[in-house]
Amino acid sequence: MHDLGWFRSNLDAAAAKLASRGFALDVNAFRSLDTERRAAVTEAEQLKASRNTETAEIGKLRQQKVDTTERQQKVREMGERIGALDEKVKELDEKFRAQLTGIPNVPHESVPVGKSEADNVEVRRWGTPREFDFPAKPHWDLGAELGILDLERAAKVTGARFAVYWDLGAKLERALINFMLDVHTREHGYTEVLPPFMINSASLFGTGQLPKFKEDLFAIEGTDYFLAPTAEVPVTNLYRDETLDSDSLPVKLCAYTPCFRSEAGSYGRDVRGIIRQHQFQKVELVKFARPEQSFDELEKLTADAQDILERLGLPYRTVVLSTGDMGFSSAKTYDIEVWLPGQNGYKEISSCSNFEAFQARRANIRARSGKKSEYLHTLNGSGLAVGRTWVAIVENYQQKDGTVVVPEVLRPYVGADVITPRK
RNA sequence: GGAGAGGUGGCUGAGUGGUCGAAAGCAGCGGUUUGCUAAACCGUCGUACUGGCCUAAACCGGUACCGUGGGUUCAAAUCCCACCCUCUCCGCCA
Image (cartoon, rainbow, N blue to C red; front, side):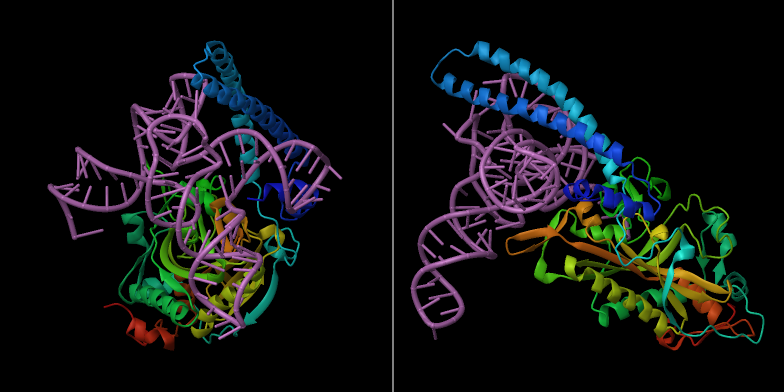
């Protein structure tokens, strides 16, 4: 959500920037609704002001034991008119608010202008994809043959786009979670939190998933709760309606959670294997930063995520998303893409974004420094998506005999050097 | 799920119909004093929307906000109803 005063006075410039990310803002409609709303607000407030004056006088007169029946009748009639005006204001307010909250964030000036994914710009490449001297298999074949990944039974127990991990497959997933959390908390300075996996609608509004993207979520019937699509939601909203001490920033939190996504509209994409699931595990990094430090913090956060891949020896590249490919709330996003032999290409494994004050305004998260209180900046990024890291390890470390070598740093966590077929 | 108590500014906490955007204290900010620190003293100190104002800041007004939403009343932090949340006890449970 944008600052109303800023947005109003920079409307044309904002509209041009929004157009670059594919959002057509009807400037005239915005202006006329804004004007109409303000006129109604002013009218109602003026009437309320005179009612307040009248009311105060009635109070004084009654203390002097003066009869005020007639005045009271007059004010009652004013109240009726105010009631009608308030209805109108409320209606216009809701319309205006719906419009304003539906406008995406404005891209930062450093973001490349483009129409789509094709216009993303590579900013970093690490590692060299391995040359296989045998036909490399995709993870769904390896997983099935090793008996560590069971999609058939997951479909029986739940449905499509769910997975059951067995034995060393389950251990590998758990090892990755612990490894990532340990690196981030012990070496990158993040504080671990374990939040609820369900969140309410106010939290989803705060980070920007609601009201626009409801169809992407699993809702719990008969409640205001939803399954969290990412830990970004519960963790960012930890400080909703709070004011943090500016000196304590940046606050750096990391959290492991499962993530639940309906994946509406993604039919036919990534249907094989576990690249795209209704439930996947993720370790998330979240930062609360002062405005002037947030872009530095984005670089550091991205580096923290990349570090996990480097320690695991997984080749990756990092791209900065073009204006046309960015998420709703983001001002700038880096995607980290890991090399997957099964896809013969790079696949997104982390998305690191600076939201500037866009979420903070929605969630009312402030920072105070002395007398000055301002909206802080929020950031987050995957550190990393665990399921896709699992895929990357199985595919990149596969051997000719179908076994998978466990990367050195993970061996203490997995309790094995090689993943061999389940007995 | 049942019974009781409670939800007031950044924090603690007073306030049971009008003089309450709200006492007091703490924290913050500005100042006096001071070799420095501390203390003391004085002052200041909520947010959003909106008008003055073409735009922005400052300033001066207005409106709204005392968990949320309704209601009663000329007038609601205060009275009534519903809901949410917290605490205590009981039940149930990992």
